[in-house]
Image (cartoon, rainbow, N blue to C red; front, side, top):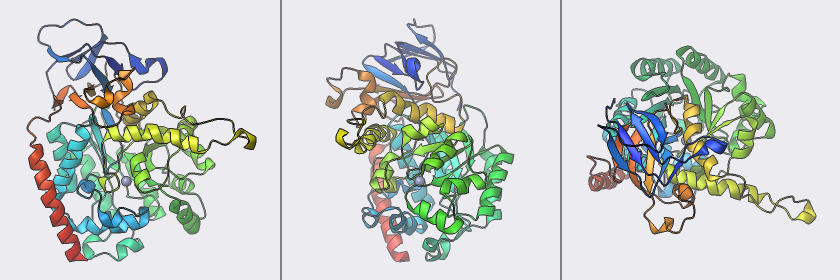
Length: 478
Ligand SMILES: [Zn+2]
């Protein structure tokens, strides 16, 4: 994936860097890229051999880093049986009901649809929580995911999911959906690490230990051992946690503690751990996550779609938690792209705070929540924060020496016309901005809003056919 093209991005209208405070914006207006790295920012003059990208009227962001997804769900959008269900019945109605319906072709197609959708929003790094595993799997999903990501030219972090413990939901499902043996799970993680894992700060491929849910998918003993093995292998840890109130009930009933406390007991907190969701947390859990530097992949659209709630990101960040954004699987997010996700995070964090506003006669101290999240905060969560939870230190910010992963948006849709500050457009105005270019590691992945070599109409046709086949298979298996 090496490139020798050197670029000069010229005359950007605005540059957001993914950094904090005064450094959140750079005046540019030019960015030089040499050997896949950012070599200079400022007023620059072209040098021989450089290719020019005209960024007039464009806004430049770091490429987004998506820290939680289930790509196989990209063919399960808006599935009617699960559309109006909360998390637990939705799991049964949609992702679990369709698990056995996927074959190698439909799995690959789903991964491609999800990755293409992300890339077109300006995403350059994807962490997929891939949990479609059962004993004697008929295809190697991990290999397919790595292949599809490489074909598009994005960085890919495989969070190796899976369950080694049967839940009621799974016990009722057919043989093909049974949990794995723990030794087989660990052996596969070791195989994946040997075959794919690169510890470099600008790695194209990473592997993560990621049992599907810390609370339900394994025994406490297995969870502890999985943490020990991950740290011996030098890989990170990821899982779902505290997506709904059900986690609090389950942890109290089974272990007499909070979900975060339970994870801490098994070694599942720390700066090498990040959890998806963390919507329903008690104050002491926020403290513990912060003190240990644990990370969050917040998925506001999925949490909204399933009616789970809204994670308190300002409180988590103030406590010391690294905040990042994930789109989550498209079975619970019909817009699984990073621009939509960031837009939703911006609005929902403000609405969340506003929901707590009280009249002054009742002790209220503020009118609304517009200070809960600025555009620069949301961008930082979706870029630098993501890179940090994934341990990709050379990614996520626009600074000299960093990998040249950047999205150049042209705001030529009426929704952006009239903006006083174009820098905020791609997040504040919602929708999908025209992607003048997406560079990942200095390689051009999107050019003039197109992915070279991709037949979008064909992808759409194949997706419609695949959805019909998946429905047939799920119904036949019922
Ligand atoms: Zn998820």
